[in-house]
Length: 246
Image (cartoon, rainbow, N blue to C red):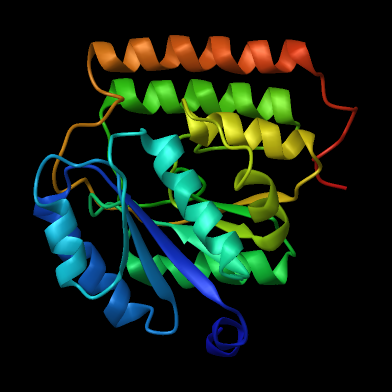
């Protein structure tokens, strides 16, 4: 695994919006456990000290002048990676949910199975992750919908813990969903023939902030994502079997 990482130029992209409380720990974790990778923080117009914390950690920082949302922030990282010749990127949330020690598992699957996108799943195998019952129901439904539309078995469609290979990077750098990017990008990349896999990972509970999949926000989220996916599917149906396992 170390040989694989050393042979590629890998960027860890950390989108961050008002994450001053957790970001320092996230960056220390990445620098200690993934020393061969570069780290980019995309500060998504934060109103707190996120920018100061990021700059103080000695990593590369892009400060957006206003809040683009998670889709726009992550796409900024994709564009940076493509323009600077990276072979692969790993998206890591700034809220502390994604342990750095799980990143090699994503990268190894990217290599060994020649994938374009590898998704870290909380539900593919036994893990210590425990979300609320409503959150798990929402994720299960959206994962089922993504599976049906894309032709690929998906168990964690809302996971933001992902590794992208060069082929997928050339697509998402120019065309990445602004709203609900995690489930929508699965369908979009599958429709374009990208090879997508999930790998079981452990995740922590977030250290700060509030999830979009809690309370009434969860109902709003699942309704909007469902409509968005169905509209995309109606606009252009994928060819039979395209993006599915051979």
